[in-house]
Length: 187
Image (tube, rainbow, N blue to C red; front, side, top):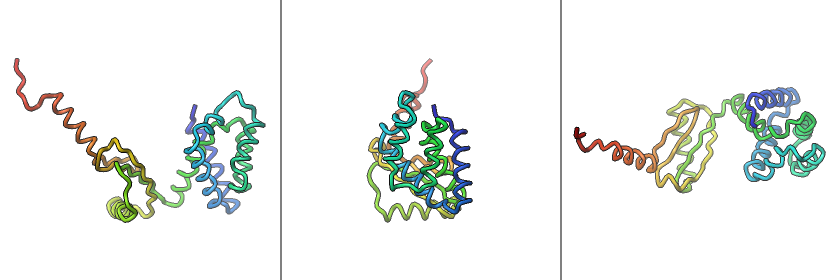
């Protein structure tokens, strides 16, 4: 079961160690690599969380997946997680590390969900608009395509959400018809 407090603590320790060793950027790149592996393979996450597989096997697989892809500090950290029996928390720890890195660097993550793929020009315009409207210095845009939106977009940042999708409009219309606001209530 994911434990956000534990993940935050491990991530904070790794951030502090990486800053002390002058390897913060390298470890950040390593954590992004691990997150990409985690997002692309549900089997890898299931493997990490399996209580049946012993630590030696997990260590060998993680070492094979990260061979020549991550630095020595990240390798040592992964081995420490396995030694302590915390490898199942690696996805949350990697995400917490990236969040803490973004906080240190003043980078704000903005998530844009659209019904179709958007052009690079539109992405740049959205980033510029978010920067000016919200007063943010650095913005990292994450895009996602969800055809269920039908049209429009959903923009999320700093625990705020702007839902300008056709799907939301259709749900609002359905709710109005279910409430029957256009016909007087007959007693």
